Amino acid sequence: MASRLVVEDVHAGYGAVRVLHGVSVEANEGETVVLLGTNGNGKSTLIKSIMGMVAPARGAIFLELDGKRIDLVGRSTEDIVNLGIALVPEGRRLFPKLTVEENLLLGAYRRAARRDIKRNLDSCLEMFPILQERKRQLAGSMSGGEQQMLAVARALMSAPRLLLVDEPSVGLAPILVSRVISKIQELKDRYQLTVLMAEQNFNQATKIADRGYIIVHGRIEFEGASTQALSEHELVKRFYLGV
Amino acid sequence: MLSLDLLLNAIVAGILLGGFYAAVSLGISVAFGLLDIVNIAHPVFVVLGSYIAYALNSALGLDPLLTGLLGVPVFFALGVVVYRLYYASFEKTGEESLRGLVFFFGLLFIIEVALLLVYGVDYRMVEAAYIGDSLHIGSVGIALRLLVPCLVGIGMTVALYLVLSRTFWGRAIMAVSQDSQALRLMGANPVRIKTIAFGLSIATASLAGALLIVIGPVEPSIGREYIGRVFAIAVLGGMGSIGGTLAAGLILGVVETFTATYYGPSWALAVSFGILLVVLAVRPAGLFGR
Image 1: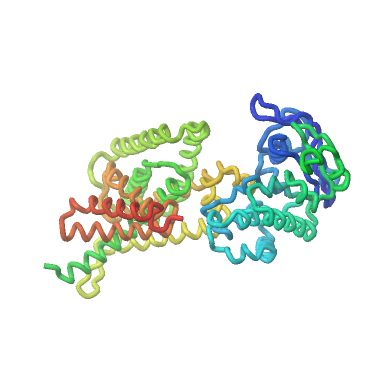
Image 2: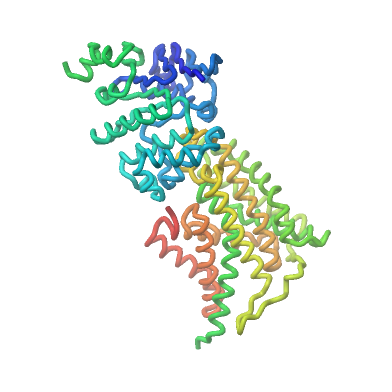
């Protein structure tokens, strides 16, 4: 059951605007890989390219499942989700007028997730006690932190092999960021997930990352084999640590 | 003078009428309330359902309710075709707001004129064992031709509610207009979901049409009387709320019957819309809107 996500020399953008200029990224089974970069450097565009929400102009994106290569470029977002890739999107994108429970059940829409829906729902509610409390409340009426928890739990309901997380810290108070991040770590350990996370909060992201990439102006400027290597890199020092 | 018998009869008749109103409005609650599709042709699909019930009743002697039930898959398919056309011509390019309205207006006229050409302007009716009978409880009379549609209407409401709240498709239908991109991230294709939902919406018109012709004789343009009313009911109940549609149907049914009994039928619709305005002023989301 070895799975690996490979992004190879991807060029992508919106209309005439090129955002990614030949990005290559990999996430191996069981790894937590972080994609670091400040706003406007192409993190979200890369995530969207993987999910089929932005069509790359060039390059390959594929999933290796037990030695078989499955190309993602050209597939619809639904197809990609059905392969077992889930995204916690930037801005959470919950269904505000559905209840917490309805949001979670929709997370299990893909056929492969329906079988274990009861078990997955129970374990989501156990991992996120706040959601158990708010089960019947409309998602739109919860606080930002609670909504982010729901977005993570909803993605998990699809029983993914690979979890993509796009900027989980945006709009959250620091204490909540740290809580969301440690939740992701907890989930990862529990489900042996492969996680690819785009984040600009360096300190929080490196708490749980195995390794990572630094993306600047649509190019991977540095690939750190460990968080140690990342934090010692001059780009990180310049951008994040103010040294 | 207020007589108790008259009052009771008005309330009972209103409730019976209300269950039927719900049946006619359910399709609008789905199309307009959940999908943002202003299908003003919905009442004429209901009338089409009536004529199919009439045709099969007069030719083969089939029970109109049975015909209505048999017509459900056919109307579902019709809804699928109509939505595909609407999607490809308007929604896909984001031109649905005004041109889509014109599309449904056109559809309304085409179906209406087709019915006129085939069946003429005369009123048509059906025959069934329960039409003409009534129950008497004390001084209150319950005509079966009103009771049966009310019960079927309530049954349709319950069935639709269960489909929407208990199935994966149903929940996706409730979510699709809130964020269709996020729905893709759940692994559902929004266009497919909307197609199914619109098919369901038109499918309700088959049964509602059978109910309409059980209640009374039907002519091709009778649907126009219902255009304002069904939208009022869908909005009053709360956009997309199925239970709310039944509640709003019952309220409007009782209010209209009450007004018609005490002040004259010409006031009935005016009072209904008056209530709609007051409710919207106090609760903009409607009675049961989320």
